[in-house]
Image (tube, rainbow, N blue to C red; front, side, top):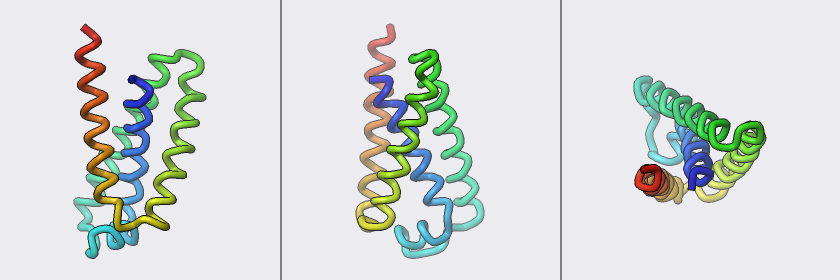
Length: 113
């Protein structure tokens, strides 16, 4: 379950990086982002990707960095497919990703004690 959380956070981060770009944001929301929105997307994306890295390294020790690189590669592939071919589904995809992060984080927190 911790790997699912790490992957979901990585996917969330790259989605945030994509939405911080003017063209991607405009494709999804039909308007340009404000400077504050762009900075918020970038900040949340950096926090999310760093949290994913920390989770991978803490749980998998030496193989965590390798696992993180794999998660990043798969995340970029998925985000690229969504923004190039399935732009209309990015909002639904983002909501499902947030729900997946919440459920896996809650499941992890409940099983930790």
